[in-house]
Length: 75
Image (cartoon, rainbow, N blue to C red):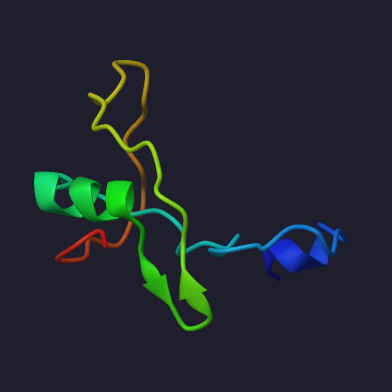
């Protein structure tokens, strides 16, 4: 299932997935954050610039078992 299965609003442009592979472990780079701040090229055009900041992992976050899949870059 994807977000469009839950949101029926033609004025919204949904991006991303709502599934088990939606999370990414690891450290985000300043370059990736800057790319989000400028906008990202998608198949149907550029996204608007985003406010993107790195946050520290909260102390209350539990270990994931199995762990989330790690990828080489966030963007």
